[in-house]
Length: 252
Image (cartoon, rainbow, N blue to C red):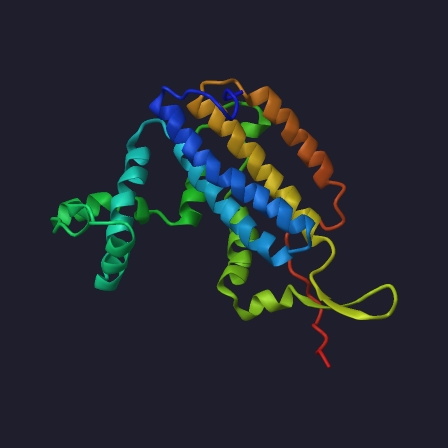
């Protein structure tokens, strides 16, 4: 609906959307590949990222004006300046790439610094909650899907995997096989559940990209996909993203 992978983009808005969509597309592919190969912790960490990508993309797509887009783009300068703050980082950059642009080390006024850091002022939980209250892009169910309730079950829970804390170990335990042996693994429902949840994020994000940036009426198509997703979700053995509550068996 956007015109295929190979096309001439002569519209800044479409180019912006194509760049925004590329990263989630490859992350989604990486998640599905990881989960299908049993690399469940990698898929958990990627689902955390996919939640954040979907929230931030949706926040931009549902805005009534361009003020949040401006904040988003200005944050590039804040982030680049932060990364190059250390002299050793600047030295490594110049040795590998070349001279730094003058704006990286230019002294800014308090007002200028505040302007390029506006994107940081809204944390992810608040953004997800406020996103849910913005006017929908369609009156169909796909336009009413909420994301805020996923913050704790997906982002907060799988941040433990990304941060490598002790909670993530409980998701990886000794399981007895059919032949009476033991193997370290995650619960068997996780790969399918992670892939399924990722599909919902893909459906929401693709719909909003087409409606908000490409002026396509994608509601009927993606609403049908969402209803199919709900049907498949109802058939899952483990309907929620929750950790095992059993006590791990000590390894011998």
